[in-house]
Structure formats: C-alpha cells, structure tokens
Length: 314
Image 1 (cartoon, rainbow, N blue to C red):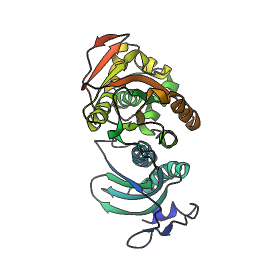
Image 2: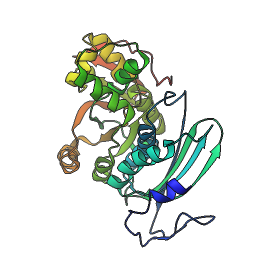
Image 3: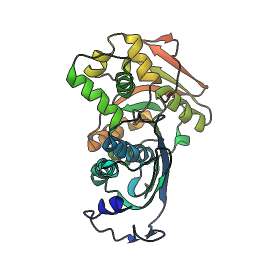
Image 4: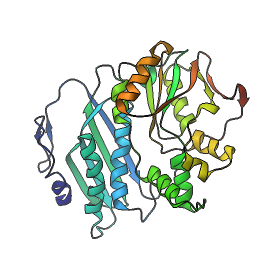
C-alpha cells in the first residue's frame, strides 16, 4: 500500500474526498448520480506474462475509463486491488507510474486499495459523476445513424504481433500497433461531449460486431446495416494486413480497441460533428439501425458474410 499512497502525494486536493487512503474506507461527498464501473485483468488472459508493469497499470485504469466514457460520465475516484504471486522489485512502482500518467490526465484520484499474494490479477473500481443525460445502451432507435470513433482492428493487429503470428518490418508501424494494444486511449472527452446529443453508446472491447449486437439487444432487439466500405483504416493497419479480408476480420471481430460505438438521430448530425470537434476525436458514420433484428454487412450495397465475432483473450 505504501507505493499506492506515494503515487497520490502530488494529486491536487479534492474537496469532495473527505477521507482517502489510510483508513478502513474512503469517505466521499457525492453530488447527484454516480456512475460506477468495475473491471478485472488477469495475467495470461488479459495480458501476457512479462508485460511491462507500467503498461499493465495504464490499461487497468483505461478499460474502466472507457466504460465511463460510454456513459458520458466524468471520472473522479478509483479503488485498486492488486494480487501478485510475489512482489518483484520495482513492479508496483512501475505499475503505479503507468497508472498515474493516465489518472492525472483524466483527473482520477486513487482513494483506496488492497494488495494480496496470489495469481497476478488487477481489479479496479472507478467512480464518476453521471452526465445529466447519460448515454445508455438501451436508448437506440430504428433509423438512427451508427457512428464509430477512431479505428477498430489495430489492437488485434498488435496482439498478432505480440503473439508472433505477424511479422512487420516497419518499426514505426509495429510500435504504433503494440501501443494500441498496451495503452488504449479511452474516449472520455468524446463521451462527455456526446451526452445529450447521441442516443445510445457502448465501448468496443469485445469487438465491433459483438458490441454492436449488445447495443441492439439492449435497445429492444433492433437490427443494423453496416457499410463496410465506411470503416476507417490507418496506414499502420494496411501495413499489417495488405489483405482486405484480414483487415475486415480484425476490424469486425478483433477486440481491445476501446473506441466508442454510438447512435444518433439523422437530424442531429451537425450536433454530433460539433461534439466530435469539441473532443478533438475523429468519428465516422458507418451505418444505420433498422427495426428488424440482425446485422447486415454491406460492401457498396452488396451483402457480405460476417466473420467469427467476439474478442478471444489469449
């Protein structure tokens, strides 16, 4: 716990944090509705043995920030539980350095935690202030536009590199793709800007098609038409997969992207564009929602067969 306490010494005072690390529980003064998210990362499932502990620290917070981003919430406080088979010299310090670099940029304060001996596992609970009009998975409507932030598929390419399934001569592209896997950038600012403008949202952690289906099911069994030619791509993704079929597999069925997938009424396209500009985040309109269930993949209007969907942890 000492390293956890040390990490907070430079954090600005929070008037709503009445009591933080050092007692049996934290005391918070809440204003309005709180948004709460919990995620666990396990070695061998969510990250490889030998992964840089700074990257593990970053990602353990990032995945929770992404959940709050999908709700349009403002992150505030976090609880951290670390289970380690043994305390290796420098591990916790490096872990907390990675954690703190992301926490500082999003104004997150660590208010409590626990360390224990056991299989390597990290659990984080993140608390934040809900938006007045929170984004919900269940609020989509037939006829809505479907949008995606950033680009999907790069984390899957990074995983292929990490596994040794992919060779990439371009060092800059390799670094970029591995960073997309190890240090995802949660779209917190975009989520906040979209609250009140978009209708429904979900973060893409399990894969674009899998998470789209989660949103459609939560919204009463709607369907969607996805324009594959509209899916955004980067030069790094092209270098990793010259084959369109491979890129499509990663884009649609890869995971760990932590982009936002969201819907909005066609009449609100200007408001959505303004929100993206405010958040300085690229977005792409990739399809529309339909009243009939099921996802139809279209390439220039021609129906395509879907790939196997859903994130498969290593």
